[in-house]
Image 1 (cartoon, rainbow, N blue to C red):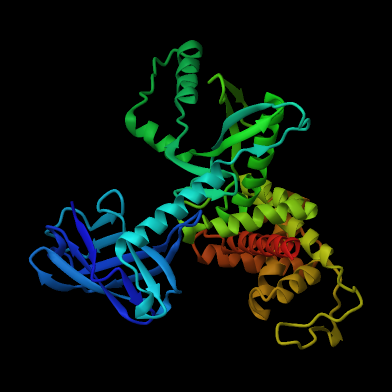
Image 2 (image 1 turned 180 degrees about the vertical axis):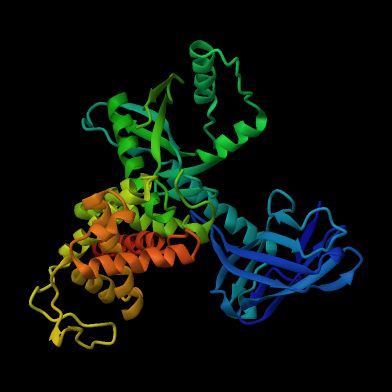
Length: 473
């Protein structure tokens, strides 16, 4: 087993702490990457990442220094080590080593002074205690009984979600989001095609359903699970409704954080006293982020803020539902209509004075034919919405907003972007042509739709965070 060892169990803040890695291939790689996480908290996250050329200290051993200047006083764990840039001689481009799987868990402490340093055994004991407390709090039953005089039943529940890809297990209070590294295949639809061809044609065609197609289809429809470990309820239906309600709120948050429109397809409840299980199937009524991890929107802190904001802001919840529906649309035309409607509603919520002059990002009044533009009309109010949120710049935002409106108008009135020449206003026709020309120059890539989605998403994220912050004060 690879060995990750630290020169000391504690380091005074600002001092370097040497980490040594013993591995038979250690000296064959040019770079060593180390990720340091906090620990003893519900969702440990990376607090320091470093990548450098390691020192070769012995055959099969390399070393790097952990710079503690950027770490707060506290306890940390070396959770991940990667050897990479190994050249053609190595079969793999990099070698990943994970704490607890590939090497024993390794902890250290950043302290204010050398007198505060503790031996490794005490640090490990503290981490175990903190992790046990986190687990104890997580497993504490959620009491949703409407009649407290009745003891009720204790349930464990699993809610299955399709079309959301996650790669990190995240605790959210008394429930958690669990990745499955699995998905839903298309065997049923594939066999339906074969049955139709067999029964309704004389072609004799039978399409094979192989492992490659199965794997592709599962990747295209990823599955994750929401786990409720302990739930006290007076009835099975009440427990199910509670779990579905919490999961639907989480799905709205995931629509923002993961940019994915997921849906529930099954719920399983287990009676803890009898072991009897009940499955509730929900018929289907992946568009989303293909990356995973914190940088891809799987931050527990963000998800918690969105969920809390959704519970405090009913209009915000409605607007996020609009965004989720827009992301479910496969046709860009419908996305333009829905997302523009969303921006209009967000702008209306600001209550801009329609007689107030419209200013640019530098504060200068914008004019048309020598007269000031006013904060009225959807183009102007959406521009002001983005300007006051400090998203974009005067030139870029004015261009984007006008193209979005022109494309939306062409679709809403004539059903296609290509029909924009039929729009009644010359300025709107011109902006539509600006957008069409840019898309053609980019060989079909629609930057405007991407920016429309991103701006709507950012505005919604900020709104929910404000609502959550207001509720916590």
